[in-house]
Image (tube, rainbow, N blue to C red; front, side, top):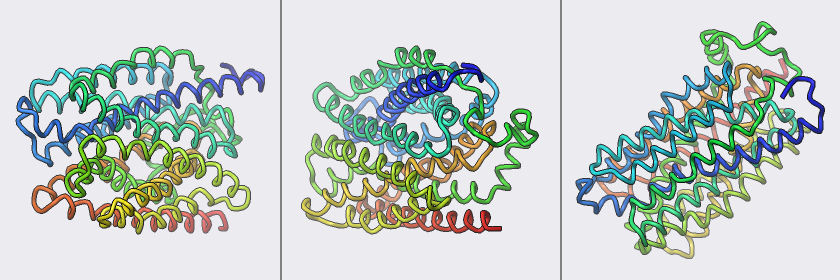
Length: 420
């Protein structure tokens, strides 16, 4: 793709990129969230040494730690090298690592395989949104990110369903083989996506000097001085803490604490996410773009208000004893939580220069996971081992509330900056 490409060509290539990258994003989350439904089977596996809740939680933490630490590397590379080739490498690597987990003869081998998945997903997660931002103008990015982010609830839900059903009928090892299989085909599909010129849909200069990407040091310094960016990341970290904990422990919570049968506890939360996650994500992105025409801080206002509304509903999910209450509450909470996914990612893309986007996304990934779902699954497991899972999960509504408050403060800060 060149700068002289016609608008119909750009639209066609942009649509192709959106379809392929969204499909990969879906498999990304299938791979990521097919593990929690396997927890109870892994806990009973003699070859793994009957791991404790803390060790099971560490499987999620291992992946996120490596994903977090390698994201800045791929962010810097993504602002300078071929983005589609980097993505193809990452997709192939994470799929091979997932399949390898099915061969694990010890907990250490399983832990290492899940940690390696993080390297592959870092290559994808830091770069794909930046490619989409270079195909679509700022006024459409909320909707584009909504389509892209719809793969998150759908993929997460399919991960729960596939993991739970395959585990029930064929065992946990087969579940890893099934999840890791499609990777090479997805890697080849990535190479069919054209890498657009950086900043081609923006009117701002290409970089701080108007020529090209800033140095890594200058890029990080600019991000640290961007108070709106820092606050956005802080709210996102609290949000990710809650979502990571919920996703990791919800099936086990329903099975152990509420007495839901194993197969139902494994796949039903995922089935709910298919509908509620899609509705929440798409509605959030569409509404945010509509509101953006009236208020330049709409992305943060919508995310903050939706998350604040979700906090008491999440509390009901973990305290209500009746299925007639906790299942509907789960659905409502998921709609509200996923409503902020597209707007907050679009906000991040819009508040940094085009040639710093991969670096900004990588830094955001580092922050939100380091303080979010790196500690939360493990911490919940530790509290559960010391007291009970019913007590441990009560930290999640608090994190949701903190996220909403931080994003509301971000909107106020952005409004002050725009006024003065």
